[in-house]
Image (cartoon, rainbow, N blue to C red; front, side):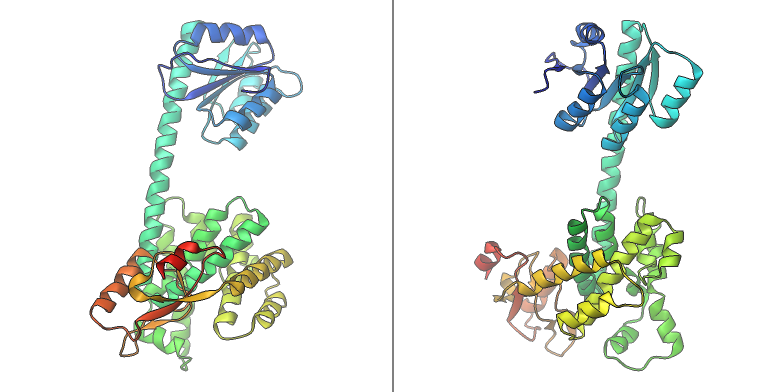
Length: 399
């Protein structure tokens, strides 16, 4: 490490994971390192500021052990900051002030795993470090498993939508692109939730009869019951998504995609922001898809009765402008690649829509198109695609 007040042991680790020891007394850190460097992979930092610097420069750490009484920032505040920066890190308090108030604050505010008192016997300290590392491995493994499970569920749901309702999936893909741009422009912390909500915003249409979807897409007159069924797709989506771990917030964002601020606020501020971004993106996409010019569509979004935040609309405007500036090219159907964006719809030779304009090619849609093409069932042999990026050289090569 570059900070002169922070030191690192290079001894062989008998346990997986790295540990940071933080104390404002260097002799204490030196003694702990001498006692435990053969069994553990240790870094030390003299004081809370150096500890935060070490976390930023060399983290994440599996375990952080902190003294309580330190100048400028006590151990409780320091461990709370550690939790904010690295939620998976297991936190341990080491203190000479062993009273109920200190322990209570450490547990409630620092969310610590172990509370040790000075002087601490080497065996007791080593046992606490071993237990902390095991706790980190357990939490980390569970989080990775959960993330992979959630990612897999999202991919399956989006693929099901792509196969069952290409038009709805195409819209969801276009909206996800807009939401992703807004998230980057606004530097949003929970961007993955907002993008996932956009991708799954149309999943409720899997419960709508195909005949009704075709009639709605063709602007046919619908009965009140049919209109109610269509409008209920967001509720169907919420019921589906809420059953998947970690997708509860996303389910609520999807459910509140109508942009009703008062209703969304009752579900939480994160849901409110996500639903506002999603509703604005859906509204703009609908206007653009209906053939309304970009400037008119943006102005309609700015003056919408739903009163979207100007920051959201400005970010959407830059996304739409960038998207409209990207060039197009002709690609043979057999030369399509995942990630390409269709600039025209692809139909069955009998007129049935297979993949809509604006669809980002996925593994499943690519396989479907190649199957149709191999059987000679497509109405065209080449399709116009948009570059996903300005410098998309790989798309040029594929063409």
